[in-house]
Image (tube, rainbow, N blue to C red; front, side, top):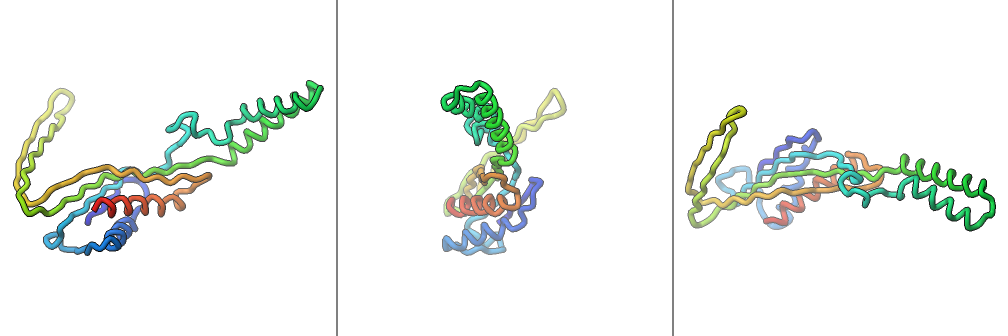
Length: 189
């Protein structure tokens, strides 16, 4: 097993969590790659805060925003009072309360993006052809091809882990993100 982290967050306990989940499924984790039937490689590309309001548009606005609170407050006051001054005052107060609530409570989402490759030892031979097109400056590229035959089949996927909570800090999100990834990898096997 090889777990790399190219994100800017500490994920040092990730390899042990993945190993624990794999062992819980009945697999034996070995240090010698020649004795393994599966090789797991994971690279955490990004582990950071993701703004739900930006990602989900209007769906993640929480308390409906301060303007909605002001309009709702004005409507209720107009229904219950004949005074325009009371209506305006209650509407403004509701708007201020809505604005204060929006600034105190923030819906935070942390997302971890991980590329995973699992290689399986096979009985039959597997022919692999790799093609890479490498950019050469601004005007050219170089194509490289290689072929090999071995007793290994490779599977690649990208795993997205999420942690979401009001006023979430990364320290709280980290165990959730790590557990989701470990669970996803062990369930692939």
